[in-house]
Length: 67
Image (cartoon, rainbow, N blue to C red; front, top):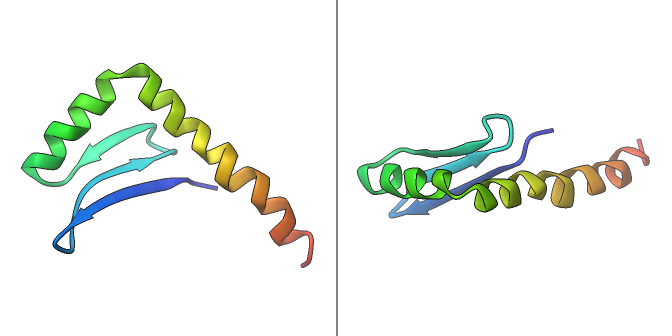
């Protein structure tokens, strides 16, 4: 299971956090600057990594128990 959070502007992806990578990645000049800023903040990275447990791991049990 992978948690991904992306930010878009004008249909272009600016940044993405992926739980498998464990950090933010920028895809535009502005996105790279934001990703570098957010990656320097350890509490931001810890909070984003915890989102996998909040959204994914708690809900996957209820989805697959019906199968």
